[in-house]
Image 1 (cartoon, one colour):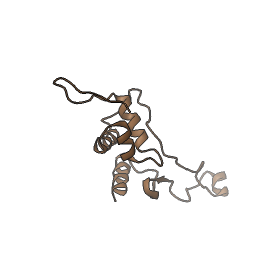
Image 2 (cartoon, helix red, strand yellow; image 1 turned 180 degrees about the horizontal axis):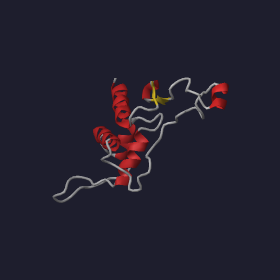
Image 3 (cartoon, rainbow, N blue to C red; image 1 turned 60 degrees about the vertical axis):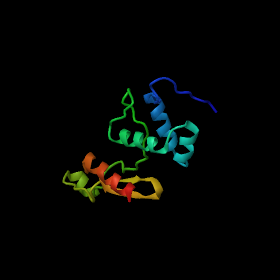
Image 4 (tube, one colour; image 1 turned 90 degrees about the vertical axis):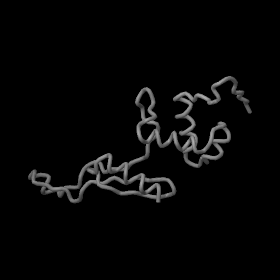
Length: 130
C-alpha cells in the first residue's frame, strides 16, 4: 500500500483526468463494488459518485472525446416490411423501431429508437434512481 503525505498549504490531492476516468471505470465495472475500489484507490465513495455524475453530464470528458464505456444494444438489421409491399415500394413498417437498454440491477428499458437523447438520458436517470 502506498502512502501519500500531504504537506504545505495545499491539503487536497489533484487527480488527473486519466486517474478519475480509470477509477470510475473500475468502480462501475460488472461485479465491482464502489466501496472496495474507493478503499483500494484511497478515495471516498462519494467522490467516485461525483465523478460519475460529472461524466454523465459531460463535465468530465476524455481529451480524445472517446466513449468511456458502452452498453450492448441489439437492433434489427432491417425494418420488417411485407414482401409484396417491398416490391411495390409502398411498404410500411410493421412496428416502430425500438431499442432495449440493460441497466444496473437487472433492469431493462425498452424505448422508441426515435426518442431524443436528452429524454433518453432523463429516463435512464429516473429508472436507475428507482
